[in-house]
Amino acid sequence: MLLKIRELSKNMAIYGLGDVAVSIVNFLLLGIFVKYLTAADYGVLGLLGSVEVVAKIVFRFGLDGSFMRLFYEVDDETSRQRLASTIFFFLLALNGAVMGVLLAAAPAIARVLLGGPAHALALRFVLLNTFLIGFTFLPFHVLRIERRAVTFSILTLARSVLTIVLRLVLVIDIGLGVLGVVLADLLVTIALTGVMVRWFAPLIRAMFSRAVLRDALSFGLPRVPHAAAQQVMAVGDKPILKLFTTFQEIGIYSMAVSFGLTQKLFLSAFEYAWAPFYYAALREPDAPRVFRVVTTYAVAVLALLTAGLSSIGRDLAQAMTHGFFLAPEDPRWHAFASVITWTSIGVLLQGVYLLTSIGLNITKRTHYYPIATAAAAGTNVALNFLLIPHYGIVGAAWANAAAYGTQAALGFRFSQRFYRIDYEWGRLARVAAIAIVAATIARTLPSVRLEGVDPRGSMASIPDVFLRGTTVIVVYGGLLAITGFFNAAELRWLRALGRRRPGPGVARAPDSTEMAGEIVATDVMDSSDVPVVAERVR
Image (tube, rainbow, N blue to C red; front, side, top):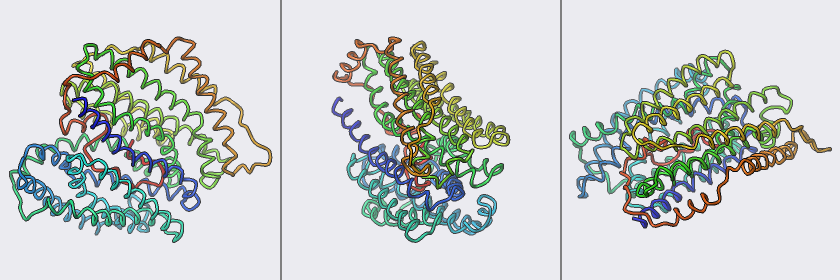
C-alpha cells in the first residue's frame, strides 16, 4: 500500500508540474503581452473565457467522469471500445448539432455579449476549440488509468508550450490581438488531436449501445450541476460586470484577479498531495489529530501568502505592466489592489474548504458537496448583482470572496456532522490576526522611489515589492514565534508521521476526486484564458 501511495503522489506531482511551470511562464510573459493587448482586449478575453467554460460543461454532460468510472467496471477490450465509442458518437452527434447552431448564431451572441459583431470570428474559434477539446478526455483518461504519467505530462506540457509560442507569434509578430490568442488555442488543439489519434484509434469502433449510454448519463448528469455551480463561482462575475461596466473595467478586473490567483499555485500543489495523505492517515489511531494539526499549518501558510500578496500585489503589477496597462498615477490602481486582496482571500477560503470538508469524502457523503457549491454559486450571483452597480469591480471581488466563504462554511458544517475534527480555533484565530497585522504594517510603509528611475519602468516598483514582502515575512514569522505558535515536538511528530509506513488504508475510488474541493475528473487545464495565470483554475 505504501508503494501505491508513493506512486499516486509521484504521478500527481508529475500531472501538476506542467501546469505550474506553464502558469509561471505565462505570468512572467505578462510584461510582454500588455504592450500589445489593451485593458479592453483583456475584458473581451475574459468574456470569451466565460463562454468557453459554459460550453465545456454543456459539451461533456458529465461523461468525462462516467468514462473513467465505467472503464474500471469492464474487463475486456471489446466492452471498453463499446463504452468509448458510445460516448464518442453520442457527443459527436449531439454536440455537432449544437455547434452548428452556435456557429450560425455567433454574430448575434457577439452583439449581446461582446458589444458587436467584431469579435464574432474569435467567438467561433472559441466554440470550435471547446468542441474539439470535448473529446480529448478519452485518450487522456486512458493515459491516467494506465498510469502513464510521464506521457500525460509531456503531452500537456507540449500543448501549453506550443500555445505560448503561437500566441507570441500571432499577437506580437502578426498583431492579431484578441483573435491571435484564441486562434493559437484552436491551432494547438487541432495539432494535439492529430497527435492523439494513436490513442483514439484503438478506442473507437463502429458500435453503439443505448444501455451503456444510459449508464454513463445516469452517472455523469448528476455531476453537471456541481460543475456548473463551480464555474459560476469562477467566471460568472464577468457577464454580470458586462451589464454594469465597460470592457476596459472587465479587463482591469481580469488582470487583478490573475494576480490574486498566483497563490493558487501553492494550493493546487497541496491539493494533489492532500487526498492521498489523508486517506493513508485514516489508519492512524489519532487521525483526527493529524488532520487538525496539518490544517493549522496549511492555513498558516495560506495566510502568509494572502498577507504577502495583499501587500505587494499592486507594486508587482505596476512593475510587470510597465505603465502600459494603467498609468502609474491612474486612480483605478486602488480598485485593482482591492481586487487582488479579496481574490487572494477567496483562495484562502477555498483552501479552508479543501482542508475542512474531508469528512464528506472519508464517510462517502459526497452528495453534500453540490449543496455547498450551489449555495455558494447562488451567493456569488446575488451579491454580484447587488454590489457591482454600486462598487464596480471591487464589489465583484467581495462577492467572490463571500461565495468561497459560504462554500467553506457549509463544507465544514456538513463534514463535522459525519466526521468530527476538533480544530485548533485559538491558533487559527492567532494566525488570522497576525496576518492582518503583518499586511497592515507592510501596506502603510511609504513607497521607495529610486532617483533617476523611470516611474513607468519595470524597476520603479521593485524596491516596494521587496520592502513590503520582507516586512510581511518578518512581522508574520516573528509574531508567530513570539506568541508560541510553533511547537518543536509537534513538528517532529509530523515529520515522523510522514516517514511511518502506513497500514492498508482506504483506497481512493477512481472517481472520488470529483467532489473534493475543485478537482473534477478532467483531462488537462486548457490554455485558452488571457495570457496570464489561468482564472478558470479558481
